Image (cartoon, rainbow, N blue to C red; front, side, top):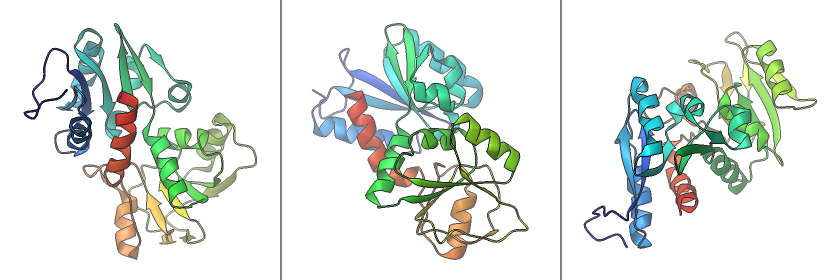
Length: 251
């Protein structure tokens, strides 16, 4: 049982929350509150890790007392090469956001995209526009059963290669470019998984507009949503659902 002083004993199960600005995020505080409310002898420790220290930190978890870690969005691709084993979704998407230590090895999985898909279902969103072709786009596409998805990117060749990789047949492919006006208002949700710095070509956005950027990362979708007066949801806006899912996995 976790005591009222939140002290760590030799029996306490430790998890890390690894990010460049982990201490600023409320992730650890929210999940630790759940551990305490349920009398679990578990604690999550925020770990501010610079990019050049990431490999050393994660690889040394194999021989530490830390049982695993949740990985902040800026490091989800970098940790994949450090893993000893991974779920099929990690292998196919090239990203990992939760790591478990199993004896002296590390196994990776993905939970944030599962949370995102459930969140969209809670919103009754079915017609989805995805911008970009990165790891989040891949992971979402593998879990997108039940959604009607259209794909947008600034490079059509890249988009074609993406749909072949994720094995999507007869995909609705669309080019997005600064000199084109795009109306997303027919979609229930827009998911921006791109690195685009400017989305001013979007003259209208959807009812729900989401990306997996945390508050320390620049979001072109957030900027455009503010300009158009539409809703925007970031990684941090999903923290309550993300921590609940992480809690169930760690338990």
